[in-house]
Image 1 (cartoon, one colour):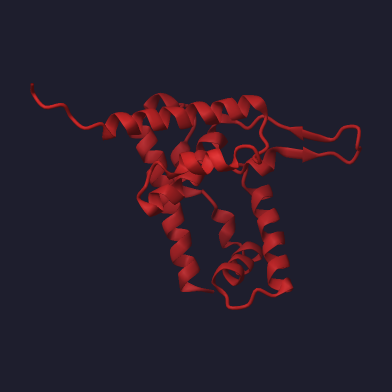
Image 2 (tube, helix red, strand yellow):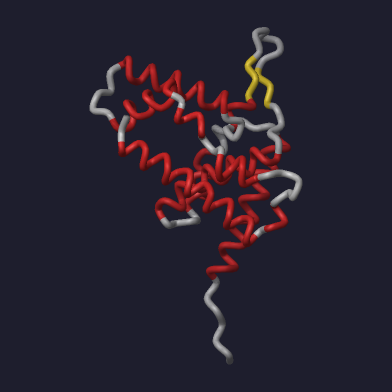
Length: 177
């Protein structure tokens, strides 16, 4: 077990929570009062990363000194476990069917997982202190990210609302002229 990875996990969860609390304060219309978001987003987020079949491979991959094929493969399995255990990842909602004629199906992501996914993405902006970083990241990745069209629309609407509010909050105040 690595102190560095433990610190990363704690910092990541804190930054996810910062994103949620910012949204709750500045865009309360995005929060559905019927859902306990604090439990999902602030307390339970990425809790499976503490399971040994995720923790050790992540720790070895990101904080170890060995990038052997065994370490890389163990990390890939851990990542697959992680996205299947955590529905706030878009990959969780991509169904690859056994029958080629059925192909790949994009399942609509429930709203509370969309909100958690955005807070997860945004956590890296909170880490750097540039809250606008998420928008460049999404623009660079959106063509790769596979999402049901309704889910994508919700994601892009939330991101647009966040950007509009950030712009509003960061607009220089006009002098009393």
